[in-house]
Image (tube, rainbow, N blue to C red):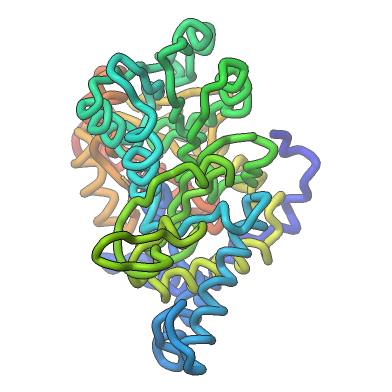
Length: 414
Ligand code: C6P
């Protein structure tokens, strides 16, 4: 992705951050500096207000009621499906399935698609940098079916070693599941290339877009992915709502996921017939407020200058990386050539949890630990890292405060 053509002076993170109420607050007596966006992003006021408005003025169940409020709630909730379709450029509205988040989206594919097709000895291919959500559901179904998990290795920069892809894609491979952007390393993976290679052998691909979706445009038709999963809460929307995109031809073949209301056409004690897509895969009352909130978050993201936002995050990444490399004893884990705005690091002077605690006293929120990527920690020979992750509302002043905090840690522990 090129960033040079964008006029960054016209993009004002200072202006944008005013729209996020929590970014005006103080933590431990200091102005909040929020650098834990990979865990969850903050929500603009419009999203919070929209959800409040639903509960105050519109609250009703969806898809069921003939009364005005239910009709209104259904229209508003379903409008999010259309917004998501446009946002990721899906060919059909029925390809958008509401779930509770990335984790549930992946589990849905494991419980339906993988459960149907896997035979003993079959393989699922993932990568060495996957989040536990894109490892464990596959392990569970492979254990049940007697299959094998295969892993694309990574180099010391945290980039996939794609030379090995061809030999890893065998006649036994039934699915490839790979992250678009690593939550721990920031690496942006060449998923389009992986999808092309897998498709040449007739193998479908699931993309874990939990981290990519808030940072750059994702076009499912351009990628040609078969499934794609993401969470609303990382896209400046609420928790409890996520998306599974699937190609219609594939989704049509899936058995139901959960049984219950909304996913049926007719029920008798002898036999149940199932609803059409997308409802067949969405049993029970959904998280209506969160669905409506996600629609509002997509409207919000569509209203900002996306190209400049992408470029600004890249600028923040470069700026912060350069300054961090000047901090004595600090090592960055994840130095891929193509990286999103996530920086994992370790320090000689302090353990990751100490780094997190000292920064917290300064009002700076980062994440510490294994980031739900324990195999990746093992690969890099570290028990944990500290991780600063940026969104377009972060500023260079935020980065400067982080660096001051890290230097203070060296003074305290060094
Ligand atoms: N990563 C992080 O701090 P859920 O929890 O379902 O919204 O998302 C799971 C998930 C799946 N894949 C990737 C690449 C992710 O980064 C995450 C969530 C957060 O890194 C919380 S562990």
